[in-house]
Structure formats: C-alpha cells, structure tokens
Image (cartoon, rainbow, N blue to C red; front, side, top):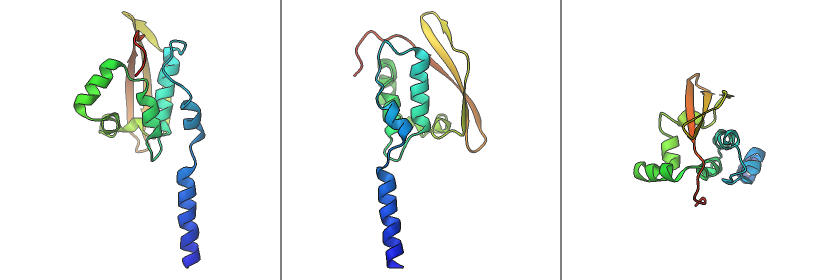
Length: 137
C-alpha cells in the first residue's frame, strides 16, 4: 500500500512538470507587428484553452493585452481573477471554439469567437484589436 501511494505521488509530481505542447509552442509568441490580428486572437484564445495549474496560458494571453486593458485590469484585479469571473470563465478550458469571419472598422480589427463550455453554455466574445505604437511591456 505504501509503495502504491509513493508511485501515485511520484506520478503526480511528474505530471505537474510536463508542459502542454500547445502552451510550449504559444509561449514562443510575443506581440509583434508581423502577427496578424487573427493570429493574436488565436494565440490568446488557445493559450486560455490550454491554461495549466501554473496559469501559463493566462500569462501568455496577458502579454497581448493593450495598455488600455492593462490599466482597466489593474483597477479590477489581476487578469487571472477577471478570467475566473462568471463572464469570462468559459474562455478557460472550453469544449470547443468557433472563429468567425473577422472585420475592420474605424482602424479597429474585430474577431467574433464562439465558445462552447463543457457545461453546455454558449458564449460569443468579440475581440477588438488595434495596432499598438508603443513597444510591449
């Protein structure tokens, strides 16, 4: 019995050290003018979809927040806290995702994304992006 418990503990430790290959790939991306708005939304949504117990996905997605969003988030708590709220929780670990046709208006790019949660909720998020002139923080 003791040996089984030791093996289970060792397996849990090993599993916590293994990184999701999607997060490993997404971690290579940083805000760059060469990335299309569609790529930026995809990186953020997929990072949140594959978030781990160290919030690596949330950290990847937060790198792409605009300076305005960072200011808003500082006033309302951390990005992770906001994502764990009722309105944004479906973005973490969705059952499926549908990316709709993007558009552009008044210098802003928008990307509708439909999220199906594992609990059966369906949410549509509208991502708004603009080209940032200041270097990322």
